[in-house]
Image (tube, rainbow, N blue to C red; front, side, top):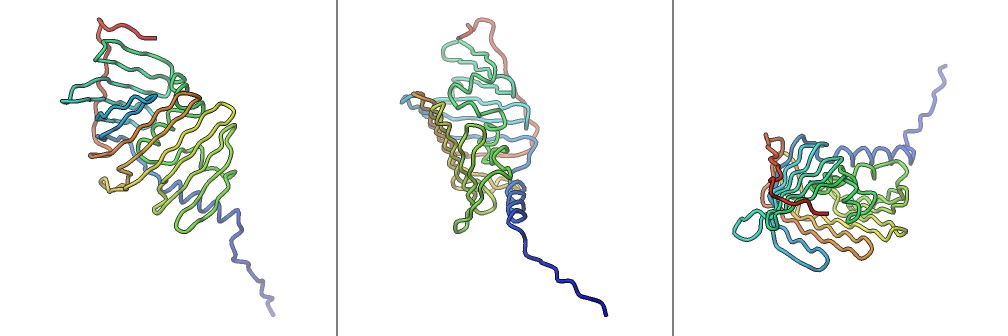
Length: 236
């Protein structure tokens, strides 16, 4: 007589966690190129301006931003790569050319190129999806929290595995970054937030960016024109 062996089909907690983390990763937007137009309020140190951002992204390579003010006049153009940031200020005929680390003065030491790319399209910052994170569920949301080096983080993942809130804090450095994604819309075959609010605090430097996408598209052929006129002066 063959002896029957009982099989425990109950998933272990670590397996459930891995399944959920894999589901979060699978729910992020995969793309080659992105373009978007966003009505934006920029508040830098209490000085607020309403502008329009035309944003183009070549995944893992570059982020191109054209900033236009009243009457569609281009005020500035920005090019960010994993290694550098360049800004042409057309209103003052000056330019800035710095290594990427320059951004960390305003957005925290843990922010890298991939962080900015992820935030602009509503993706989870990749490093935060890891098995050391604490995972909890609340109603229809998943809460991921933990520590990454000196960074304390908390993510709220909503329906469709879309991140609705990201909180990053480095108390030792006096840095924090909070991002809220709202009003998700269809863009082709993808779901993206149409409202993204970013608040960065680095000691006494506070920057708030509120983006409202009115156009967005993925994987189109894009150009990234960027040049510095010879008469422009370099700004420190």
